Image 1 (cartoon, rainbow, N blue to C red):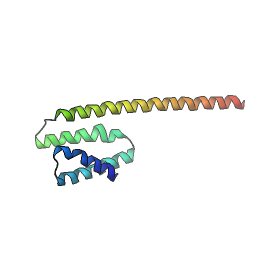
Image 2: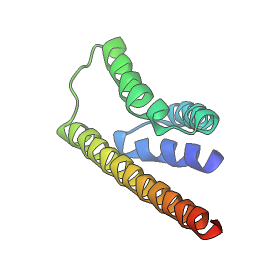
Image 3: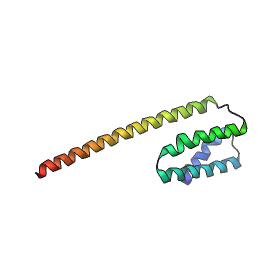
Image 4: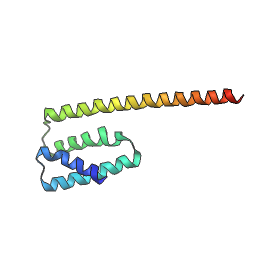
Length: 111
């Protein structure tokens, strides 16, 4: 979890964050890692916490402008997450079908 939190904090280096902000982001990364670890569902972290936290931060500071790179990055991550979820669901369906077929063969063979 510490490694994931450190990577989360380091991701923000390009935004010109200071040391105190990096420490805060490391702590936030720990919170995100714990939230994910508890429920083992990426939807807890993204898209709920990350964009909502960024949106709240922008509202709080009065700065709503997001750089195009950030908006494109959120979109790319969203597309990648949908693709991974779809592939995982497809894999699980195939695995369940294979297990059901194996059980049917075992039942027919025992008769």
